[in-house]
Length: 322
Ligand code: AHM
Ligand code: MG
Image (cartoon, rainbow, N blue to C red; front, side, top):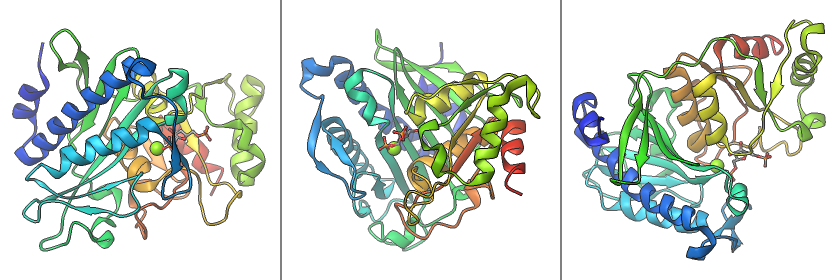
């Protein structure tokens, strides 16, 4: 049995990054505990307010955001933080070398129905002298991430992360209150017969995506020549975890509901960190036109089209867009 701290000491060259990951997991244990208590802790339901993106916030979105903010702000290594639930980045310790971006509770529409949600994080290096409260400091492409990961709150609470040398997963052992190593060097199978997409948006997709999904649905009689299964949990952490476990393709593609939003998911809090994990596990992550981690961000809350998972299937989906 290998505990998280031991693993980080042996595998993470930068002790600041190790401390950020470990510190986040302490707060995530608290979030996990509150989620498991659910209604007993009085944490279910709406907060009665909207976030910067006009989405209504759940009580636990707000609680998780406050807990993670407080934890990061106290860390000497953290220059600044940016959250999906905050309008602007927040400056922390001017001596710190790192910026931490996070989605405190992804998939939060699932909280009230007791389905898996998760915390996603991404760590970037701060440029020398940069202000941790300045949005421009954060506008770095995903391939500049030094670490990324998520904590999944499901039947078990899991931590999955990468510092650029493979993907590792840990299970929270509630008997000792510690994350212990479960799987090292996770690999996504190159081929799959399972796809995940919100089909109710079909009429809004680009024609290329409509054609690809129409071919998936034709199964072995169609040009792709095999029968596919579909899953949609509406919780990206759960979806990506399934793909890291048994392969698959996850898509939240461009759609034309609102021309100012190229897709629903956020580049900095969802697209980039999940792309790093998928690619570190041998999969692919694309907008359907270019690698997600090569997109040069121009705003902290910007949206991105997402097609990621098993390498061969992502390439197939992208080939419809050439
Ligand atoms: P959130 O950050 O507001 O929770 O939104 C992100 C979530 C993803 O976890 C999930 O893949 C997607 O939204 C589900 O969207 P939809 O409700 O359109 O199915
Ligand atoms: Mg989210």
